[in-house]
Length: 433
Image (cartoon, rainbow, N blue to C red; front, side, top):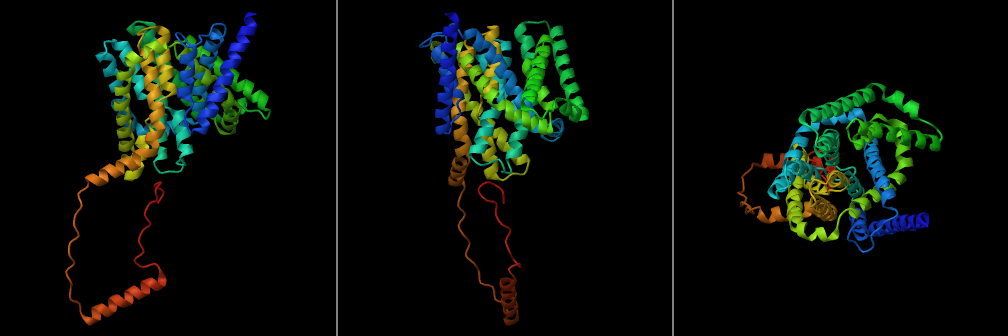
C-alpha cells in the first residue's frame, strides 16, 4: 500500500512539473518560479502536504544539484577558464563587490549573524546561468558583441563557486578555523589539480570515457560524476563542486554527446530540486520577509545592471550593448537556491529560506523583462535628459570659381566610383555593425 501511494504521489509530481514546464514554454517564461510555487503548495503548511515520496524527492534533489553543475562544467574547457581568469578577473571583482555585499549587509541588518551574512551574500551574488542562457537564445542575442562579456562573468561566478561552496559547507558545519582552512586548502588543491589534468590530459580522459554506444557513454559519465561527487563530499568539499570539475575535464565530442544524453535527466532532477526546496518552505513564512526580499531584489537588480554595463564598457562595447549586458545578468535562480538550500538544511536561520525563495521568485520573473527592456528604457530616459543643442547657422564661405569646379569634379567622381567619402556602416540594433 505504501508503494502504491509513493507511485501515485511521485507520478503526480512529475506530471504536474511537465504541465507547468509546458505552460512556462508557451508564455516564454522560466519554469523555475512555477516549480518553487508547486513545492510551496505541497510542502509544509501547503495545500496538500506529501508524505510517502518526500524521502525519494530529497535524493532526487541532490542528484539534480549534481547534474546542474556537471552540465555547467561541460560548457567550458579548462583553457577557456584560464583565459577568462586572465582577461576578465576585474569584472569578477566588480561583480562580487556590487552584488555580494548587499546580501551580507542585509543579513547583518536583520540580525542573522555572520554565517547567514556569508550565505545571503552568495544568494544575491550568483546569476542564473540556465535562465540567462535561455533568455539569450529566445532573444536571438547569442551572436551579439556583448554576449562573450556576459558569459565571461558567468564563468567567473561558476569558478568562484568552487571556492565559495567549501567555505559555506565548513561554516554551516560549525568546524573550527583550522579545520575550515584545511577544507578550503583541499578544495583549492582539488580544483587546481583537476584544471591541470584537464589542460594536460583532457584528451586522454575524453578518449577513456568516449563510446559510440550512447548507453555506455551515459552510464560511464553518470557513474563517474556521482563517484567523484561522493568522494568530494566525503572530503568536506561540496559534491556540486566535484561534479563541476568532472564537467570541465571532459571535452570535445564526449562533452557534446554527454550534454545531449544528460539534458533530459538534468531537467527532470533539477525540477525535482526546486520542488524539494519549496517543500521545506512554509508559505506562511514568506509574507513577513516579502518586503526585505523586494527591497533586496530591487537593489541587486540595479547593481547587476551596473556590473554588466561596466564590464561591457571595459570591453569596448557600445552603449546599447552595455545596457543589454546589464539587463541580461539580473536573473537569479538555481545557484541561489542551491546556496540557500544548504543553509536551510543546516538550520542556521529559519527566515533565510523563505527570504531566498521570495527573492528568487521576484528576480527570476524580473530578469527576462530587464533583459528585453533595459536597453530601450535606459536610452529613452537618457535621451530625455540629454540637452538639445540648437544648430548653428551656416556662414557662407566665398570660394573661387576654380575651387568650386574642383569640388564639383570630386563629387561626381565619388558618385561614379561609390568609394570616396563612403561612410562607415553604423552598428545595427544588436551591436553587430
